[in-house]
Length: 347
Image 1 (cartoon, rainbow, N blue to C red):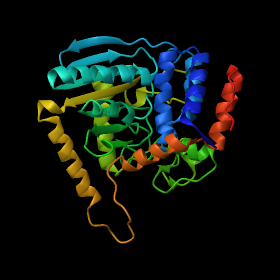
Image 2 (cartoon, rainbow, N blue to C red):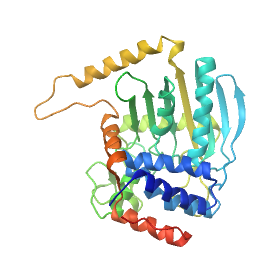
Image 3 (cartoon, rainbow, N blue to C red):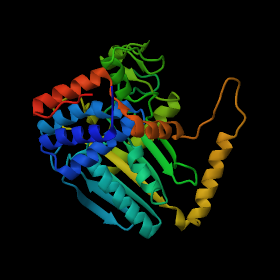
Image 4 (cartoon, helix red, strand yellow):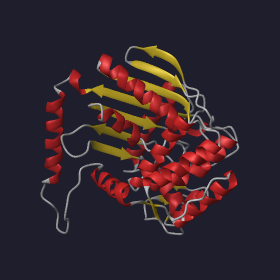
């Protein structure tokens, strides 16, 4: 069923506010989920709202964010999120990184003791809107084994890079370092569909197309095999290790509702004007994108796409025509609404 973004936004905000989240913070959390669903990244959309609420109710995510700056040195800072909502903490960290980059040319803001922050692109795009380049990283609970291993050691540690362009949209790379985000496997299981080969393995390390087998002690697999695992390891170093927060096997699953998570992020922002005139960069960025768009196509390929282009197109259409919510997710959301005394979603 499709819903207008405004309806989903009001619904999500009402749920979060009922759980005790302040209005402004509810807006921030909701914005990341609506953005994800609008872009077709349902793994990070409203399907996450029930687990967020459960963790808030159990005190594992603070109802009202507490964010403190532990270290502040010109172009760098270390932030402690004190187990607040990841979206709120990450937004404050990115705002700080943008401000510092504007003053010092480049900035790196490290975050510890945060929570799941949604799609990394949301924060990277904030910098691109300010004519800056951003690199955003986060660690997660372990999901992937090392190459040749049979034990979860690293998360799929998302990475996003955004840069402005004279084109319709910024240039945007937003990816998990597994072949697919775990949320997509959860989404497949909830909707009773199989997953493509290469997405995951069962608890014995054997490839599987059954999402339940992946979720029952199995693994998601790194993109590009050992290269993807190596990149995930370096993201772990730049997030959990460098911040002094938890990392690797120290981090429990979000769906383990018996304990807190301590998630770490890294926001790196580069002020383009420290290197060249912004208009020149935007023009050159657009030219690079056109090299991609106008490249010779392989047989049967109708169009070539820049990173992020497909998702931007989907988002524009859905923000105008409605955002789909699957039956399984809608049922979960409406059960949550009834439990909190909020009006359920309906056509």
